[in-house]
Length: 126
Image (cartoon, rainbow, N blue to C red; front, top):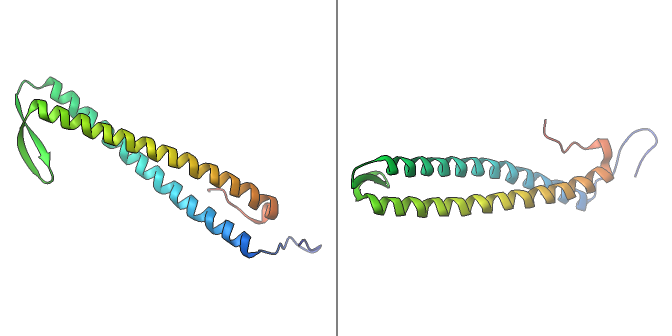
């Protein structure tokens, strides 16, 4: 309800739920950005490791398993790195899809909330 003296709009329970949902989505969006950055770094590191393996002449290389380095045949390490890159790439794609979904939901909520509250609500990042 608009009053003539100010821009007071009644906040219903549904409005509050939309605001809360937007806040949760915004937090998840930032978490996803961090997770995507980490996944990209991991992918780059695996690519670098793969390239280094190509350059080495040794048949047995040190490979980190947990907190221990083990001597493993070069072919097996190459296969493990390729498997790890595949898993990381799939994870990265899944994270990007979730990020797009979150952005779409946030855009819908922004439209609803700005329609009702106008300039009385700020949903933008500073």
